[in-house]
Length: 435
Ligand SMILES: Nc1ncnc2c1ncn2[C@@H]1O[C@H](COP(=O)(O)OP(=O)(O)OP(=O)(O)O)[C@@H](O)[C@H]1O
Ligand SMILES: [Mg+2]
Image 1: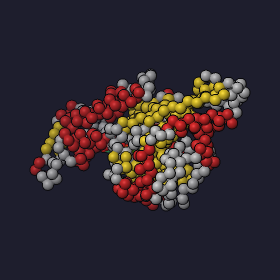
Image 2 (image 1 turned 120 degrees about the vertical axis):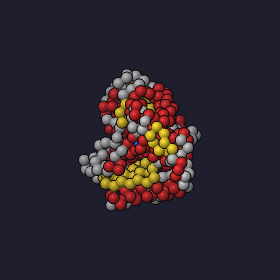
Image 3 (image 1 turned 90 degrees about the vertical axis):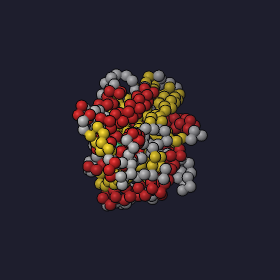
Image 4 (image 1 turned 135 degrees about the vertical axis):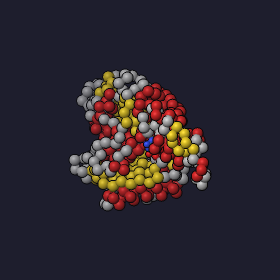
């Protein structure tokens, strides 16, 4: 069974009885999921795959051949388990300096009642404004979501159709990433004989897998800490309110351990995941951990250090990381009531004690967010490291796929930019979902 090509018309309907495939190309691993969407619209995982990959640096494809191989292997593993052949995939991206901005547009209604045609005109105006804003910026649009409607200055109208008004406005939340990383990721996936159906910012995907509706309504910040990149997505009033990324993550903790104790990276990674923690307890001053020598043949040179020393190195990096996270949150206006919580996910959220550390560093309630609400998700893909991957399936299965196909422009393989018609259909579909 192949994944069918989606027409704009189909985007407006639930993707019932279809197969969705997702691919997360991360700095430490490439992971794949295949899910079936039943008539009732709930996705169920039917295949999963994962491959370690050294071809990606900070979310950027740095070694095309290695990345392609890992993509092919991860997807083949999932295909074999599912018994289907996949042609099109949803792909997450964490590179490219993910950023969000708001485009506001307003149109004249001249005192009439607002009709669906007016809404289309408003959204088309918004779309043109967005294209104008990013043209020549070297960035691509990943996602656009009408977040807030305004009728004659009255904000927060969820369904403006039927109101008498002079002016109708909308704030459209736009997520962009630098175009070259998007193109290289697209190329790596295509070279593995898969078409990219859409690319989604990893923080947006992870949010769909780990946050509850209530959290998004009250205000919440999702912090996804991977191996190379940390992505932060702020939500409020039920919609995405900001997105940014920090070029620091779990790989930097590993590098610090390797350099502090003069050991190999692989040994540092083991020390971190087996013995590491973000908080020390008194007995960590007495518990000793073995530090393998740089030269693996030098068996006599194993040193032992108190676990507290290892934890001190980890905390040194976490201080820097959470300093940057706090700055990014402040920049995105995530201040407000202390009740607004932070949710940590991504592989590094598995570090022992990191929720308590984060709560102290950010002065907020912090919980760890694991992927949930996805039937059939195997244990191998149920951890924090797979939140983004699981989220791609959640987003893909929603009625009205609110993804923007990236307007890459023609590539050597002839990938066309998203046509305006598709854009409008997608924006309207998001609108329908919200009202
Ligand atoms: N138990 C653990 N304790 C500490 N760190 C852990 C643990 N388990 C995994 N990690 C770290 O999580 C990171 C991998 O996370 P994840 O799989 O989310 O990253 P990625 O998707 O490959 O990379 P990125 O999203 O940054 O491109 C690695 O740095 C790994 O060391
Ligand atoms: Mg990741």
